[in-house]
Image: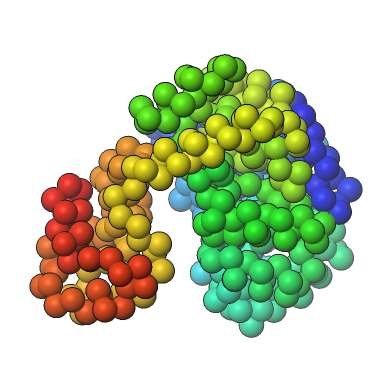
Length: 377
Ligand SMILES: NC(=O)c1ccc[n+]([C@@H]2O[C@H](COP(=O)([O-])OP(=O)(O)OC[C@H]3O[C@@H](n4cnc5c(N)ncnc54)[C@H](OP(=O)(O)O)[C@@H]3O)[C@@H](O)[C@H]2O)c1
């Protein structure tokens, strides 16, 4: 296992950090997942050199922290740093923040949390956290030794990221980043900004939640043509670790083979390792994925609200996900939650055209919606 310096912090973290959001299997014990299997996966990772573990209050129906707490008994807690998070929906004042943190200590069976994050914030959520005094609460908890580092995880546009990171004295940030997300969310600009401030960056969704692990034919052909043979997973992790700003790469693993594979990969990768030819390959791979794009919707949502309640960007995102990464719309969480369950479906479109006049990309939305719905509806 390679270990990496966490920016300005006096921390050396394992290049591979284990994410505790994606365990699966049959419900057991206090959890909706297979506890015994999850505990053995966590311990396998730690025994293999992982010293950074990421969870959150809400993961796996609020049971991820409980399972992690059990896995860290028998001396394992002392071998790792724990990152967990405060969800903005659950807190409204200092008392509720304290109650939530105390509950997390109990679930994790620990008396301190190393990296404590405001969970999944954008500018709006950050303003809410500020309004209830979360930054001061985090600072006080640091002084009391209850948490070691004040951090946030981010989902939103780059402008929000720049605003938030400059608006407080953060110890670490967690962003979604992979070779397909260079211009999405915080993106490369956000990574480099954090790096310039000495703030370590922890990476989530390095394989886009597993989508980059299964290369489509045109991408696999590029990997196959390259003189050095590596799996799609290895290329994705290698590309990330090449960036010096990256502190640790989180990956959620569901099988012992995945843990072992990742332990092997993260034993070989470090900053500056990629050659020019390798960078060229990843640029070609990115283009090969992009060539599968169905519609150039950027998800800006200028077309919304639709008078008929159709979630236009949500439908286009699922259409692109299906084509780029082979995601079955039935398994696409965003599509299920925001389109199907909310009844925001394309068959409600009456072709009024209100959306088309507002689209900055000048997309022919009415026709595209019909085509998309015929394929994924
Ligand atoms: N703060 C936030 O808002 C937030 C949001 C997202 C994630 N996170 C954290 O970041 C962590 C990492 O994100 P992620 O779970 O999306 O990571 P990821 O690495 O992008 O995706 C994990 C999935 O990739 C596949 N995988 C992993 N290693 C593999 C291997 N060696 N070979 C083949 N497939 C492999 C597995 O998919 P299959 O199950 O399909 O096999 C696994 O479930 C999460 O677990 C969570 O702790 C935080």
